[in-house]
Image 1 (spheres, rainbow over the protein chains, first blue to last red):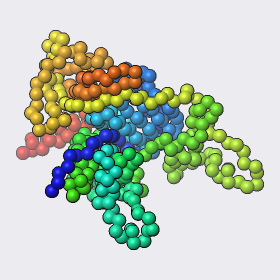
Image 2: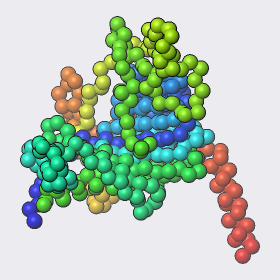
Image 3: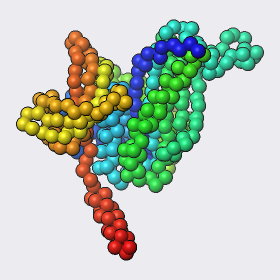
Image 4: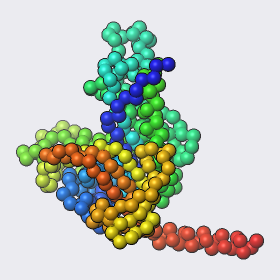
Length: 219
Length: 179
């Protein structure tokens, strides 16, 4: 078997998505600072796009937050801040302990740079063989995106959703969603899930991207 | 439909005003299905018996969005640690290598000066922190190698958690007493 070098991971982003009932107007960097969730210096010079009854959107140096009345999303592309992201969300919902929460997504975006166009096409050709498609399409078909879902066989129960797509510049993008249902609608359950499972689920997501690419290139 | 997949809310903005400020289209804002809307712009636009007025979403009164922070940090190594001792202007910590999890834990002595002033109030025995080393790139500055320490910030126990723990302790005490 020809073991090639692992492709270059050029983008690495972690996102937490929470579905529940929120009041976007209260989410502001000053609120985070007042509750000691971020250092005072991080609340200065913050890029606040909007804080409104329907939508709050602002960015810290290392974090982007977007909140509507039923969806909360926080993401960072600084791998050194993946754990602080988790801590921040845990802290926020420890304070907002009465927030009803129904679902959580612990998500990861991985972007790999393939060596050249041939290597890039190999990913699409392996995951979506063209032989059958070429029988009914006049021009050579190409894979745009592939979606895979699998149930998790460990705690917390839920599903792993993977979307793989190609991007310009011979890149392969993985959007991995670790979806979890919060059956008791309690913020305390969210905190417990993040506390116990964040690192493991992040490792599993990273392993998915690495394994898929490596297996394809090793063929 | 996967509700917890990440989405990009830049799709919410459509056009901009004469000052290049985004005008948010309320039709594109996610809504709860049971939400009561006093004025539904989408149904008003469909009316055919009156000339459609030029209704615009409320102006964004905030200043134009500044250019996104283009600083980046290329991580070389990451540790998670806890403070084991504080001695004058130094503190000792046990650190666990997150970049190479198979490596054994190490004991490291830090100068308190390495902790940002905002985090010094968090410096106490048992406090957890994240230590990262990497290359920092900023607009207008040459690349620099940086060591960053960030203390974990989690609020204290809530009263509900304390009460729950006390109740649990009472139950267990009664259980053992019965035995």
